[in-house]
Image (cartoon, rainbow, N blue to C red):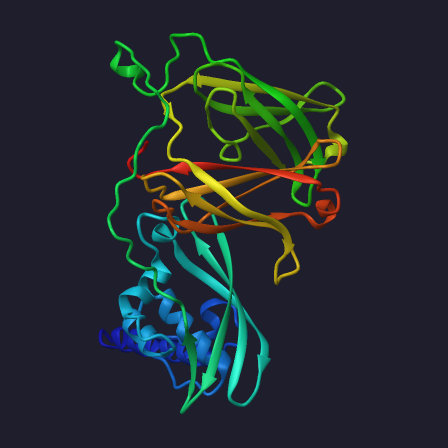
Length: 379
């Protein structure tokens, strides 16, 4: 009798493994790992473009780089495995370096017996929340279907000298506990210059602009409390990262505060509050916003496209774009933000795109873009 239990456990384990294997083989669709193989290290020969792309993305998801790289058809001999890996995991401490591919959704755009075009929505998990990336993949059929890899590797830039002539404000204090922000002096004079409350698909949104009217830099947060007709607080939230936190003298920043699942019809008043703290700051790195254009992306969404150019000699590891959109009366009708996944190295540029709700796209007459700058060394 004492031998029966181990035998039963082994039999059940084998049965569950068999069910797992056959279940993975029958999985349909193109969402994440459900469309791929069931065991690490196992990948069948691709007889369809969907299967080839799924096998490839599963290898990328699991970071099986040798197999992923060997399964693609390269159009450029300069692409080596290291450049291929760097394209997926990023470099220079950018946001992609701290991200992992969580899942993906794929759909065919065009297919023949010898080639296919697939559009994939990649869902990344990152320290700043989920990030989506839409990419088109070209596949060809040789002895089997393969993904065509035609990404041009990032060129190696030679060393250069960048002159430094930017303004900087230092905080001098005799207390070791006040090295970053100072609360024992008068706070910088920061003022909310506009506020607009609107309904969105997710709930209520309070947005506008804030200005540092002082001659010293300030670390800024904007808070809002929604109040009902009885004078009771419904909810209170902060701008969190949807604001340019460090404002230099006379600098203006958009802000946006989200109230999920709160309908504006229940709100009678909005109480606003701005918090400002004196901090050390510098006007470098200088990031230029280039080639801005309102457009429609392949998904049919209204977006603001552009490029960020790092004009300084300092690497910006995680650039964060915040854009305010105005109607023909100069009123802020929307504030949108997005993180750039690649680091901004000196004298180089990276593209960005932020979305505008379709219902507001026709009202937008102007826009303004600011950039938060996050660097690993903490400057």
